[in-house]
Image (cartoon, rainbow, N blue to C red):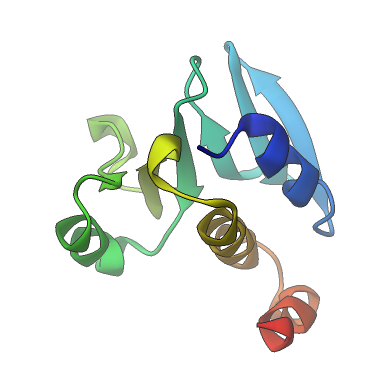
Length: 114
């Protein structure tokens, strides 16, 4: 299982990222845009993800991914159960989510590294 500390150690290395504690939940953002958010019990991680691909993601691996709460369906957002992913998949999810909220010129070196 991936932990909040593992995600934090990666997320805080990404340019322009800051950590916030909002209503009992840890969130990572660029400016005012949140790209990662944890449930209070730190078992679920919401992450920026294109709405148009969300249903396909969830249908492919429903044991791992789920829809966000109803009020967040309008956003580019999905949720993953941390117990279901390893460090490699976590890294991909975090970097992809971050890349959605920063300029392409900032994320380009990370895309080239893949």
